[in-house]
Length: 580
Image (cartoon, rainbow, N blue to C red):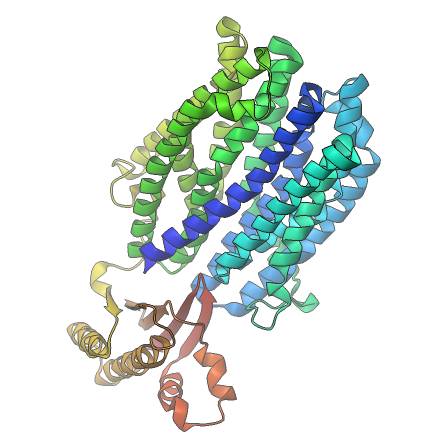
């Protein structure tokens, strides 16, 4: 079930990231084909401001994933709703004033970005004014993505980013063929496409089936503080990215002029599209590590690490080979005529291609550290990986090789970072990074010893009987008192039978129920996880008109000292705590 979940989430994440990057790719293609190299350079110079929007939105989105994965791991829907309400308030509080400031001061901002005068300044200023109008929608779309994932709305997520792509393509073409809106029109087209995505994706949060509830009373200072704290690592990453683009533009302007900047813009856009695999891997790692870590689920963490490592290597190799082969054709989409900028972009893209494998592995580990609360790790890694190593490589290698040396920035940065992480893991754990769970550098007291836990998979009613007997034998071996042993057996029999008899039969799909029994600190915790239709027994029982139809659930609720339910990642999660 966990492998299936990982693959489903990874597919949805990659497709979503791919569709979003396609908007930027299409913008670059249309700009290059219809508005010229000078316009591409203006687009590249405006990138730091675009990255700031993405930085705050991406950071807040990461904060949501960490904060809410913790609350979901603890089984607290109320805390999840507090995170949801507080995140929306924070997005509005940042994006609206930021939009106004950039729109009003777009000209001096453009000059500060390196657009000194003439047409370059005009185009950069125009694009910024058009794009910044969509900042609130961009922010809204970014923070709603993790909530759509948590709710299992992968189809709606893909539909919203698909609509964004269609709207962007349509408006881009109309801008250059009908309206002649120039760079302002290009920026405005992107803005309107984000509003389209927000409209479609946001429809779920306005529906009755939404599992999240917004309330002004749930906008808490403590939750905002937690979101900010969990967003800081992503801020470091995004800030480093902004600095990298700014410095690279300066380096290239000095070695190759505007043509080198244009080549870097094209190369970066194509590279960002290929980076959809690393974005997907990082997103899955962050969300699921947060949930499994807070559940102290060592087995699921090991499965997650294995699956994402395999995906990083395989997908990175496939996409890297495609970039090596088709680099000239990809660059030709942006720069049609043969020339120096086209040759530089092709060479840069081919040098960039091998970096995808270490980039994917680094992304997986960074997000896993953030999901497990290792804030300092990801802050340091982000600065070194995104800013220090690539900038140092570009500065050093441009001395003997000129502009060509700068293209090694990503390959050197990602490869050296992976080596440093592996050395750090060996120093902390005493073993190789890819053995067991060494790469995650888990605390010594993480989870419970194997002899204090038992896990069982259930697919049939016969499996329920077997699971109940296994739990009974396990508890007997632990010298558990007869009353507690009986309560555990009843909870397994009633809840598992209910899932198999009712949840498994609602459709023709094959389903699975995972049962986990843990003994820790004089408490017994039962976790039931299944991939059936959402069903909350905690809320269902008080609203049930017939006491007979839910007698088993009522019995379990009477036996439990604490019972919590959450629905996340298209899975029902029920935690039952029994005190000895």
